Length: 298
Image (cartoon, rainbow, N blue to C red; front, side, top):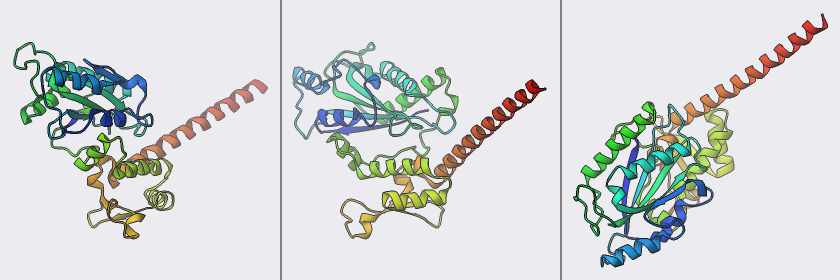
């Protein structure tokens, strides 16, 4: 089952549009929409609210931010597949009665493609069963979230991703605090997101966990400590300079499962195995070529 988070927002739509369509996170091939334009969805959202005389001041919800991610430990899901499954999820649930636009983020986290879906708070058409009327506000109830996850589970199975099914209680691959989402809606990059990127870069360079910790300190100014339970604690150098207003020590659980010590160890080991296998294949190819040359000389 995909992991799904639904976050209401009172902020301007343009800010979140600029965040989810950032060129360092996605490309035009993986930006898609329904019921609104791809270039200026905020205008279509507002037109719909105005038509049904919905108040769009800062005290009222303007949209819902749906984040859909998958368990990618056992199999990699391409951006194309993430987009297909996200579109199906929207088409086969109550979201289909609302305007929405979405983007698949894959550039900054290649092994963890996920989708951000922005849903208008105002329905633009009636549902087939008439339970949702045009003009009705979006209802992100617990029952709705459960139905969404059940449908996501079904879609995963239909696409053959049996290993990507997770239960709702499992730890999320990534965790976004409300403060982070608030910054995203303004088009800003939260410091925790910058920390995640630094971790990913260090992880790709490192040959061991010790080297990972050294790279984090030397290249990115982040000290990595291990607590009594064997979990990582990330400490930005700004914290040591007493600039604690924004950056504080960050436990791995606040970033998500992908940034845990266990996950990083596993990723480094898998990458080492891949390199070793590739090296072995090259050696075998060389030996095979030499053998053919010897046979030819005879």
